[in-house]
Image (cartoon, rainbow, N blue to C red; front, side, top):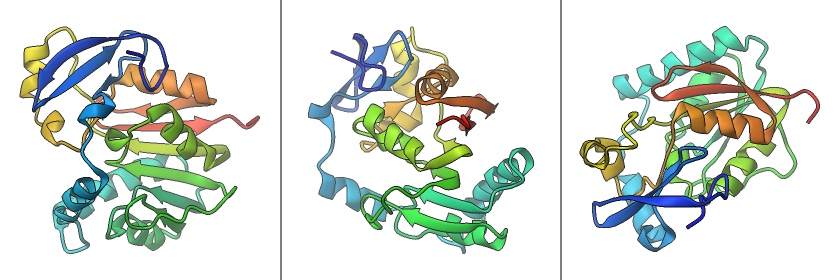
Length: 216
């Protein structure tokens, strides 16, 4: 089976949660094959179970931590796109409080992505793990970033246990049936090189900031 990100041959890794996982030796993506993906309606219902709002102090604090990192490393941001904002676009409100004009997109809840429009910042939180076709999906995200702009991604990196499937099975993040793609720092290094970005910040845990080439 080919890796859906770098398209090289991936190997069977493990089975758990009533589905299989494959591991790519090149880009280190761990992915769930399409036959184990949940139906779109069930996926949407799962998202509606999330209690994400401005009243959730922990949720807001998580976003503000990432916003502060973005402001530190990219101080000239004027426009942003929240790609995968969910049913309640909290991040849009927080970014606009910081003076950043922000638009939203979500496949399930706000599906109208402006054609051929680019932004100083595209931020995607807890979205990359849901991508069914990572190569195409991430390229779509990358195309929304203006040249010399930034792509900020928050997704939990899987622990460096790729040779130990038992440890992966214990990892809570893979138990969500809508989580079907799992990344490491190396995965994002591959993405950056393939799509014309450079890694500006990588916290080795759940957040990367990429800068797009000025030539694209």
